[in-house]
Image 1 (spheres, rainbow, N blue to C red):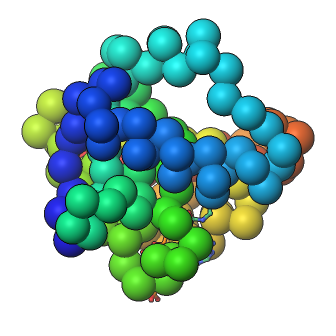
Image 2 (image 1 turned 90 degrees about the vertical axis):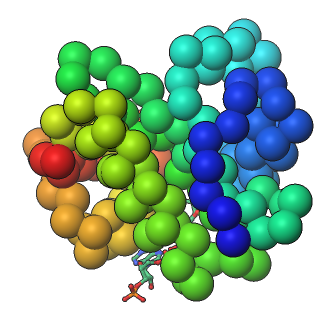
Image 3 (image 1 turned 180 degrees about the horizontal axis):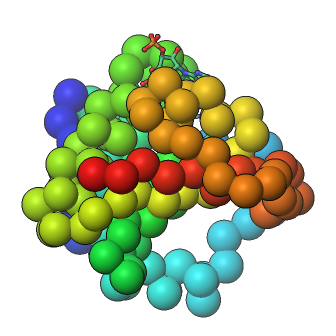
Length: 141
Ligand SMILES: CC(C)(COP(=O)(O)OP(=O)(O)OC[C@H]1O[C@@H](n2cnc3c(N)ncnc32)[C@H](O)[C@@H]1OP(=O)(O)O)[C@@H](O)C(=O)NCCC(=O)NCCS
């Protein structure tokens, strides 16, 4: 298993988009907007691969000294074996190396405990995004 940053529009990037589609979009009957995907050129794309297969992915958007973690997804058949935790650790190390001082994210309510176990704290009140409840969560680095 390897976790690394891959190039926008690389083969691994498109595999990661497919993972995001399967894990995050299809269950909500949502589809990717090509215009929105084009804006990801300025993000960092992180993947975990087993062999040549992307099994997990997340995106980093850095702004105002903080790292925003987005689009966190692990293939359902590989969940609960440590891929997500390993990617979050990788993300935090990368953020520190870029001298960012905190991680911020919008967590689906169903994933809040996952992030709390990794030291993240809820902020404010629950809100709706893509039609489901979310919480803002943060972790200082
Ligand atoms: C949430 C998700 C990214 C976690 O990744 P994962 O690879 O399954 O998680 P890990 O195996 O690294 O789990 C780490 C720990 O968190 C726990 N955990 C995993 N998913 C959890 C969840 N949804 N809620 C609570 N705890 C969770 C695991 O049991 C494990 O606990 P342990 O350290 O005591 O053994 C993944 O399950 C996923 O893609 N879910 C669907 C999409 C989603 O919700 N994405 C996040 C959107 S904000």
